[in-house]
Image (tube, rainbow, N blue to C red):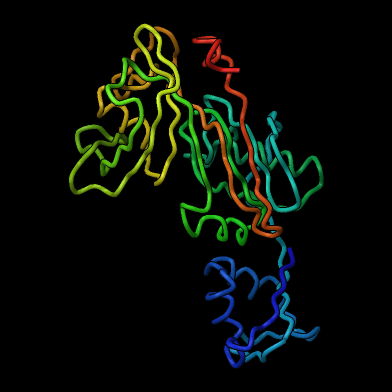
Length: 292
């Protein structure tokens, strides 16, 4: 991996480490990787002193080997978009993003590591966010820790829209759910609306109604665990298939939630990346006229 910067006049006299961990956006982990296992060149000359002070106009280049410790696995991937620094995939239901124990070999990061390995590509596997095991749809994966850091400094940098099928009919067909969330002490691994919880905001719009259900588009303004699931359940409209939060499993055996659209600015080119993941077969079969 190689990245380069030109020192601005206002940065003249500052140390390499200060710039890397400051305006150039390196995380502590990434800086240590470069410092101990990479190379730093200033105007073509290699430096090992993190306190070296640069001057205006200096060209600083960082080199390091981007790799992953995840064991590659031969698993299929539905690739939606790829370039030198990003990979966007359509995650199926039943797949975790990260392993929950050391012997796991069937998560999304294992599948991506296997894909890179088969291609002979040396790259990291850095998902920008998580989806629940049974939520389908777009996952953005950075091929380096630097790109991951650049795209996750603010939640606003990535627009994420979901499609869901919720029980019942909404009194208000669109609105904002601003309900703080925190862990449910009575149910391990579950969350609930609570006054002392963390800020959680979801915009919604009903786009179709059936006899006893609503198809809803949702936009996450924050990224809390189980945010959509808990917000909808708290309004009395749990997701179909979401037994954990009170949804009926009569029509579908997992929560009817799909990460539908992701939109963001490419961190290198500045162009807009727009990605839309096809709705999974089990959700399409519920109401074919809604999902194309």
